Amino acid sequence: MFKTEDYFGLKKKGNYENSSIAMFNLAEARNKKYKNLDNSYYAKQLKNIQEFKKNKGKSVNFRRNMVLRQKAANYKNEIDRIHGEIQQSITKNLTHDLLDKRKSELEEMIKNIN
Image (cartoon, rainbow, N blue to C red; front, side, top):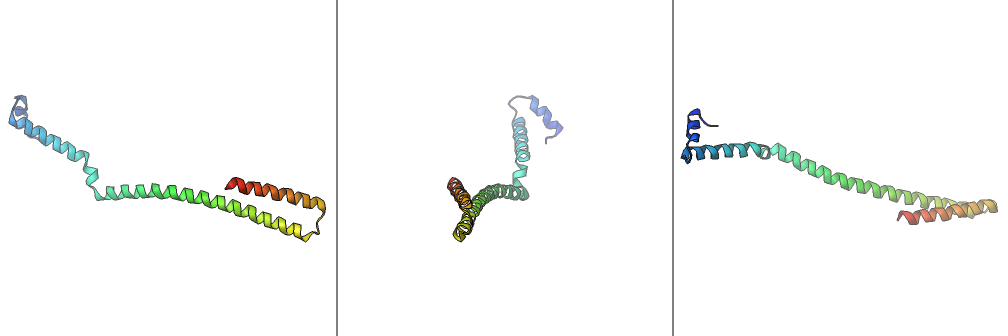
């Protein structure tokens, strides 16, 4: 920092030496404060953290959309299965009514997803 003989110069007001010492100390403090920003590893680490956060948000949205599309596809597949059951017409009328009711429920679910 500064020498002990420079300390006596600080006692006198308006001394040129004390302003140079103060400027030196200010420069040292700034260098110490911003030392981590000069580190290239630190800058790379900050960049990686920002990319991770950005990609995490994209990944969550992508997964949510995939789950919604999968639900809709499952409902449509079940509707197709019900159509197949109805087309065979071997089943009784009671079963037809239940299948028609389930079909309408599934169609409502599909509308609510989208």
